[in-house]
Image 1: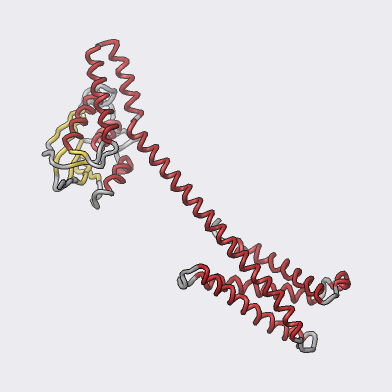
Image 2 (image 1 turned 90 degrees about the horizontal axis):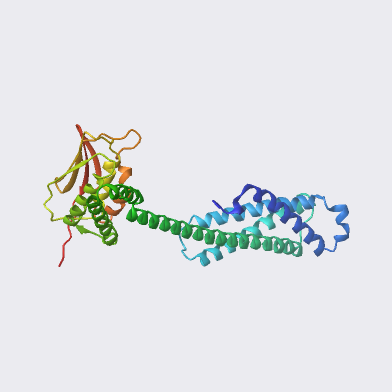
Length: 341
């Protein structure tokens, strides 16, 4: 519902036609000439009533738009009263002037006060109905808009919740680890046990820290080493992690885990070459660098870390950025510090 139907062209064309005919029938009824309806229905008075209905409805519509453009008064009830009074006064002026001109130049006599009162009463009533119709549809539109907004917010909340759930479970890593575990169990029980320990350690960290706002970088790095060891047992390029962080800053939980896993999964698999990833501090930022040999249909881009961007926006104005310097691609994360009293 992009706009109220009272502004639609079809309604503006048809509504005055019906209201004009209704006014004409009421006039015949009031003047006790209903018996002449069959003979005089298509008389010029009918066309005058329809034309007058068009004029009054358009002026009423423009008066509603005129008041809508003003920010004051803020009270909707006060604005509605002013709109109604203005529309009624405008209707009285238009009807009075039109009837005087019609009676004087077409019927060649002057209308009396009773005739003007009848015309004005009927058209004022039609105008008030038009205003009520506008207000009713305005409130209906407002209620429906609020419901749609709430539904969109609920949908967005469900989608965010699902993304968080999927991020915490990480189904790809889960099934890949279980598949590797099934293979190792048949070959080497000790290696299978070690893989299961790493797997459980990583998921324990993910599930216990997912509700924390920030964690110490040392905790993240410890789990990151477990993740790298786990990835090295999966069918990806083998990873060598070089870490030179001092360990006195904080980080949003699972940030490094997600970045390193994304780097590994977007790198071409090779049995002969290692993927060397370095993590260091650089002017208030964490710098993650590697030599990219990325898959043709999948590369590490800023879209790959949208949820991390959203999380970091709550803690810093600095942006996460990706830069390519020569043969190296670097991801820069703002360093976060948490002061306790």
